[in-house]
Amino acid sequence: MKWTVAVALVLALPLWLVGQPAMPDYPAHLASYWLIAGGASPFYHVHWAFIPNLAGEIVVPPLSKLFGVDAAARFFISLGVVLWVVGPALIQRALHGRVGVAAAFAALFAYNANFTWGFLNYYFAMGAGFVFFAAWIASDKRAWHLACFALAATAIYFCHLFALAVLVLTIAGWELRSRRPYPQRLGAIAVTFAPAALAFALLKPVGDGTGGLAFDFLDTALDKAGAAIQLTYDNPSFVLLGLLAVLFASGLWQGWIKVHERMRVPLLLVGIATVLAPEWAMGGWAVHMRLPAVFGALLFASSAFELEARARLALAGAAVLALLCNVLALAHDWRDTDAQYAEFRDVARRLPKGKRLMTVLDGDAIGWRSDQPYWHMAEFAAIDAQAFTPLLFTTRGQHVVQLDAADRAIAAATAQQGSPPDIDELDDLAQGKVDEDEDIRNVFPYLMRFQCRYDVAVVVHLNGPRARVPDMLSLRHAGSFFSLYDVKRDASCAR
Image (cartoon, rainbow, N blue to C red):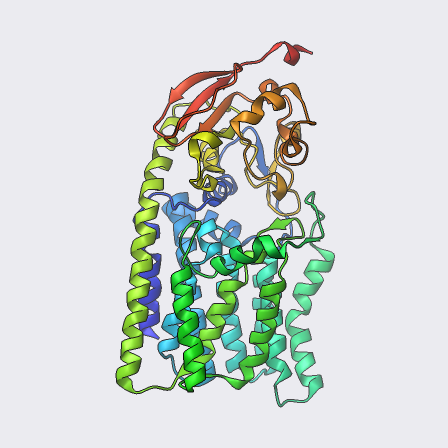
């Protein structure tokens, strides 16, 4: 087990080689942690509720008192990486009595879309779910065991609801093949998850987000496959996934990979759920990207390589080499974006306090490059300039940071509204036109007549040929990859 901890620490190393990891959602999470820890803001307040999405909100703010919010956030993410490596290894040990080479291949799934996007609460909770499942396999389900499991399951529920749902699925599959009488199996599951079920039924607050499910199997199929392993944001490692698939398939065919018999049903259930997962559920996006890495990690954690020592050593060397390549690729990619984030934060600190900022994308200038790492960049200004931004995570019923009533109408109310507009849409938004662009009605309703409510526009253009800047924007600062513009009021604002 010692080598798995060493692998986990190496995988977490890129988090400590940069000031800010280039995760699209990270700036918004960091601003939330800062506000919860007592950061002053004229726009936001903290309203605690029994929300099943609180892992970082509970862990990071207390640690920030000792280490600062940046270091505390990176420690929290690092702990998630450790859980994603150690958890599958513990599952393998519980199943096979030892930690073998397959655990090293399971560790490759620690870098996944949930990690690179910055879905921090789910990532941490699912890592804890792996450890929980390993303990469940190893336990003989005595009364005090079940009491501890019930407490842990409730904690995972409040960390993230979907992680608990995945845990219920795997444990249900595991118990289907148990030799114990059915009443004992069902009783153990009921006792374990009843407190969390009651918390969901009685305590979960009603939110403003849209409910229901939305499926798009054709458009999300490639995203699902790529979500299993990502070396950097928006860079799925299809080659590595293909090699792992060939390795596993050939091992099964030749008989030198054995999947534990009791794990076949859990793997089947998680595999089906992975294929059928919706894109949207309960107001949350990217549900379809949550399970591929879980399935991959469980698949290798459930397996044992029955090979000679020399062959196992060669496979272990290949796994370690792949892990090191992933670490180097991630650290290299994050370095450039970290420099951009640092440039923006330096400029944001010089802004007058209490401004309302909005992010705008110059799609023509950005071109085919990914713009998602800049969607929440302006949220750094909530820390550095006590600013307001419309994309900070404040959805009622899903987050504890809330907007004051006066500003709710000019902020994103749902995850569907969680992306910035293009600069070409500003003229229509300023005039309140909704018939020319469907996104204006569905995605940016809070930006109607933005010139009357916002003070500064953060226009991200990277280094491409830029589009025309609307007349209501006046240049304040020209940066290397972004520009700040003062938003000028017009005659309609007086009305």
